[in-house]
Length: 548
Image (cartoon, rainbow, N blue to C red):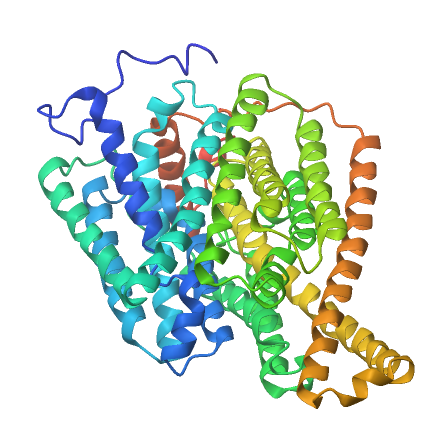
């Protein structure tokens, strides 16, 4: 194993000409990754500005933003096939062109379907360009192909850009207009294209693998299911859930897409997502942990903006400055995970306990802190803890999927499941549940406060009705948020106790196979798929193990 992963001489990138110093070549691709990650097509930080200047609703902007995450997640299952079909230069140029078009469309369209489809396509190509860059410098980051180390790099780039993109978007809108953020990114993407044309050569992969045997029907059906799930979570409160035909229709369509997918996976030789990936123990464990963990942190999407804007009176620039606290937490979380989990090989259980403990700190701090007179600096500790916790849990359980023992032809399918449950469900299901709970809790507390004010404080009878209503609603919001934070804190502590008493001796040993091994595995898989299509038996070696 050690000989297999031993580096062969100094690291070099043959795609880049030799007149570029060897030490600078990896930083060129890091620069490309940063541009691609910033270019999301649509910037959720500018949602309020978009709602104010277009006919779009807040839910429309959120749906388009989450459609980008769906495009990113659905690409995982085929990203290696595309990598071995096209050169890095072709992938980067094509992705840049698509992202430029997406930025132009998202800046000016007011059609929700066009916006959602555009963001979905942008997410797909953003993921492909990111893979093209990161796979090129993987051996530079970790010569032994240790994925725990590699994922620390991935998340310090991806999660940091999410925070920095929001900061850049708000300040661009503050000093000019929100559309200018799109034009800034168009300029950076054009610069990237020019640099790729000059500095990246069209080097073909040693083994040409055509795009045969891909279940595109399955990809479409899985996309439909994810879109329906996201639609229900985003628009559920607006349409009053299943009392509306739109939500009922999305539910039926989602169940149909899921049922057809499961039926097709029972007999297809290479379904888009196979039962082998869906039934894997590490995939199931990661899904359950994500559902609990990101539901606990869903107050980020539901409470923090309302509390800071409506109760503390922060304007948009002060609100977005809170991203710096989360950014600091992400940097610290990636550094901590690198030195403990990646290098010292701390156990999965230990890292999970630390993540849930930090989530409990976040919830407990807000439960005891939340009030009318909180200064902005006092929010540093909970937001910092949230940033550290979320990045640790993401790195740890993504590494566990690499270590799940799945054949490499099935492993990308597990990444698609992980992307959907971690990114899409984590961003939509939790906020939908917490938002609905807040609505009912606020109605109950507002009724109780209204009764107490009129019964025991006759001075309030002389206040204007609008002012009295605003006081009741504001106080009800504070009490309701404190109540929900308390319940979530109890769930976090119970989850933390359950994890601590569980038995978990496994340590990270997630080693990525060589790219030549991956090419051969995919090549044999394609040949086996073609033989099965023509009625010929596939060889037993068409599904090599991840570690072989």
